[in-house]
Image 1: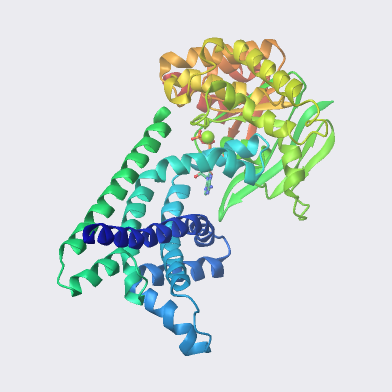
Image 2 (image 1 turned 180 degrees about the horizontal axis):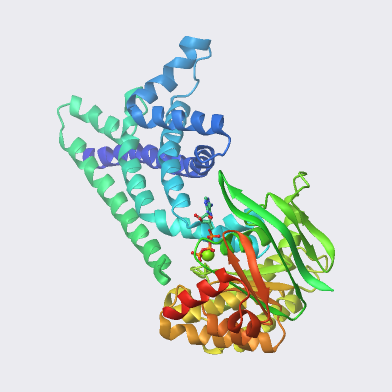
Length: 214
Length: 261
Ligand SMILES: Nc1ncnc2c1ncn2[C@@H]1O[C@H](COP(=O)(O)OP(=O)(O)OP(=O)(O)O)[C@@H](O)[C@H]1O
Ligand SMILES: [Mg+2]
């Protein structure tokens, strides 16, 4: 009876991790693409603003960013953030978008200029060149680094507990305080299984994209 | 009337003046070869004609109409530029095929995207696509690639890749097709198949401008040869005259050097 209720409480906690994971991915990937355009902008102020932003986000701990998003609006502007989960998502999305943007930028810049020029002489618009020709090649090149980042994200979701969002490790700690240590250790299994599935998924995607070289 | 006339085209990169006033013209159905030593500005000339670079001054006329004017500082809109671009085709030295598409899709991509802008596209989707596919297959047959429609560029030899890229350019039915050293990236034993394709196109009266180092080929295929050096046209004329009987010292010197190789 007790075992079952502990496990189900851990599942409840892990649901929160999964939620943070899914929402972050969903929003950080497109936002990362937009930020990558900013960091490649021909207009210098935008470029440097974006670069500084990415430097700050990548240069400070995510844990600190969580605290800042949670408490800074209340202290600075007297508009306290009304939900802890919102704070978590804001911090995670911004943080991961910054990382993704650098991966996108690397991928986009690695596509030879000749691809764009071929599109141009074939009368394609810039949009068509990007979405019909370049983007797919970028995706193929960035699957591996993105999968790295995504797997890190799964584990990072447990950082939400620093602002008291009851993710799985925080749930497990409640039992530790009662003198029961195994629930805490068992949380590793949840992460391992989740990341195992992701690894298989990314392996599958990589294989699918392997039909051509270049 | 000349189909293409280039007048006094100039282009500088920073302080280096690469084109110092290049002029030449050609008739419809003609083949013009451009020869000249490395760095003389041949690629830059082709890139300016195809709007990959903007010439600083000079004019380009198509069918006698002013097509590009370097003196006109007004920015050409992207749509207008595309419309103009479609009059010309360019075959690159290193192919620039789209690696994720197979041969037939490489050839069909641009015509399909263009067709989507047609007003009757929605009603006649099927017919239009079929027409484009048929056209692509015909062209690929002309360049001898009927067997390779569904291969990916990475599965082709250099010569086959270059033939796909020629087919891709032809699919848009350009008025003038430009080639920038189409055989330079190929192993010597593969150049023959490309030259053969270009000869065949010449017999079909495709209007072409070919930058090449293959003097014998240029002599055989061209109606006119243009010799460039240091960003200017030094001499031009029918192949017999220019190759056998060059008037200019610099032309003679260049041909001699090419002969020694
Ligand atoms: N984007 C550029 N920026 C600066 N200089 C350039 C650029 N493109 C070409 N040049 C210079 O212009 C000159 C002519 O180059 P171009 O490529 O047109 O010569 P080419 O006749 O095609 O030579 P090759 O036979 O080697 O292909 C060279 O000196 C080159 O260094
Ligand atoms: Mg060149």
